[in-house]
Structure formats: structure tokens, C-alpha cells
Length: 226
Ligand SMILES: Nc1ncnc2c1ncn2[C@@H]1O[C@H](COP(=O)(O)OP(=O)(O)OP(=O)(O)O)[C@@H](O)[C@H]1O
Image (spheres, helix red, strand yellow):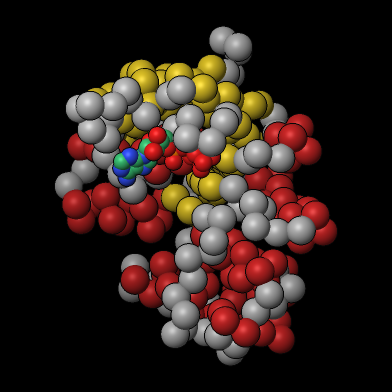
């Protein structure tokens, strides 16, 4: 069953330029792990931001199950982003004045939810951050900061995790640790995983690879149009 579908998704940032994303059609199955590859500037981040509801398309639609994402009003869209989508970026995007624990629980706090103590302790252990609970992000290594970002993305148990080059800033060992955590979310918790990557080893781990070239997407459908 498809969890996420996009139909004729197009983004044109300015009238003078070609569309950054040009009539992309895709369908992602619940529990799938999809990699998105393509040259720099081809439209990968643009696509991910639309799928996560963080930026609006010029035309076209995104559905998460039956929800037409861009027909939601601003309040509904903010709730959708917090509850349904976990976003991970290359440069972590942590809040520098909040501790590890506060960064991780932020989406739940914003949602007025109190995360049970047991759940926080377990998540910190899975992330290998038990001894960093009260640390500030600036005192952490890159790999540790990305693990905090993963905790923050997973805390609300989102149906879909979208990661934009999550290992792009890390060495090989840390990269594999991060991918292992994301794969565990995918295989053990059944969360659908979409990862932008330039790393062929990571793309090779995916169930399916989508390719974007000059804003044109191929491999968007499970049965393969590539
Ligand atoms: N906010 C923006 N305003 C104007 N143009 C933008 C904006 N964001 C992206 N673009 C343009 O859209 C095109 C696609 O950019 P995008 O960031 O989606 O590519 P990408 O494939 O993710 O690249 P990279 O691999 O380098 O991160 C590029 O030409 C870029 O300059």
C-alpha cells in the first residue's frame, strides 16, 4: 500500500529559470526504504522538502495516505509535519541552547506531549547518547549531533522519515552507524525511509533508487519506470 504519492509535482523558484522539479510522479510503499540520487543542483532537496510539507510546490499534489498535504491550512500543516514526518538534514539543525534531551523531545513538547521517562531513556541508549543527556550540541562530535537529530526525527514515531544527505558530513564509520540507526527504524519499527545520498554504498542498501536529473525524476513507481 502506498503511504506517499506525488503527482505532477513541479517547483519553479523563478519565472526566468527552468523548474527545479518538473512534473515528478512517485509512489512510495509503507515500510519501503528509498534512496534519491542525482547530480548537485538536480532537485533532490526540493523534492524532499515538498514531500515533507516544508515547502509548497508550484503545481502538483502530495498525498500521505488520504491526506492532500497542501490542502491543509497552516495550523494543520504544522501538526502534520510534527506528527507524520521526521526530517533529518546534513548539518543536523539542532538548537544550540537546548540540551540533547531537550532537542530530542522538542517536536513532542511543541505538540504538548510529555514523552514518558522510560521512552527517553531507551531512545538515548539506542542512540548511544545515555551519558550526553544534559550536554549542549556544541560539545558533541558530528556523529553524536546527527544521532541527536535522528532522535528528534523519531520521537513522535512519524510514519515517514526523510533524510537529506544525513551522512554527507561524516566519516565512514559514523556514516554506517547513522545508516544502521535509520535502517533499524525502517526494519524494526516499520517506518518508511527516504534518503538523499551521494554515496553509492548507501544507495545500494535501499529497496529502490530514484534518480533526478535536471528536475526530472525516474524510478518513481515501485514497478519501475527506470
Ligand atoms: N530557495 C531557493 N530559491 C531559488 N532557487 C532554489 C532554491 N532552492 C533551490 N534552488 C535551485 O533549485 C535547483 C535544485 O536545487 P536542490 O537544492 O533541490 O538540488 P539538490 O539536487 O538537492 O542539490 P545538492 O545535491 O547540491 O544538495 C538548483 O538550481 C537550485 O539553485
